[in-house]
Amino acid sequence: GNSVTQMEGPVTLSEEAFLTINCTYTATGYPSLFWYVQYPGEGLQLLLKATKADDKGSNKGFEATYRKETTSFHLEKGSVQVSDSAVYFCALPSQSYNQGGKLIFGQGTELSVKP
Amino acid sequence: NAGVTQTPKFRVLKTGQSMTLLCAQDMNHEYMYWYRQDPGMGLRLIHYSVGEGTTAKGEVPDGYNVSRLKKQNFLLGLESAAPSQTSVYFCASTPWGTSGANVLTFGAGSRLTVL
Image (cartoon, rainbow over all chains, first blue to last red; front, side):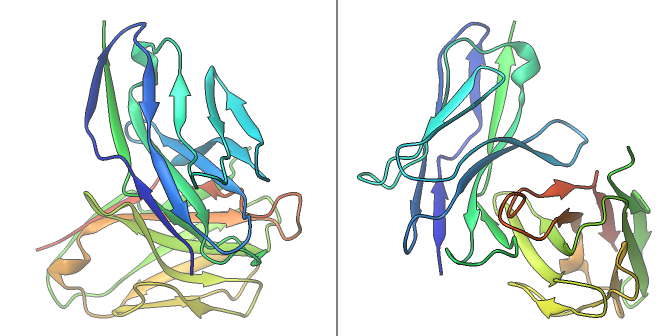
């Protein structure tokens, strides 16, 4: 099956700093890739996704590019805000050709942004 | 827009006790999942269902049972709770079909402590 490795945290940044959270994957074929975000006390919610190689997903100022050459899907944001403090999860389907969900998640990276 | 609702939100059990977590979704989604979240381990799939009346094992099914008698509900049972089952449990759902495949909608979580 597929697998994902995510940069460990926690990550502490000052407001307006640049953010990168690394994510690499192992997969057969080219499955969709996802970033989910978990705000304190809440469930996970989809942040962005990319469905094929070279796609760029974006939302709320965050971006991630599906790079098949390096099997990576790093999350970036040019200027973080205090409200971005959360735990970020990289995810992909457990099997590339499975339409039934069954995502596997990285261990999560906790981001704390200080004013 | 209720989405995915989990009950209870918090529960403390003694070792050996039993309990059931309820997940209800009002989006007419075919697929439903139970994950557990533990520090440093991301989310791990316990059981899932691809439709009413069907269930299947995920990555960490031991000690848990599930039922999907109605399309909108997915129950997770612990027959004899153990301290190792102390965790935060998340229910999620997704519609069938390529357009919505793999985009999971999560509940807010149920925090279970087993003493």
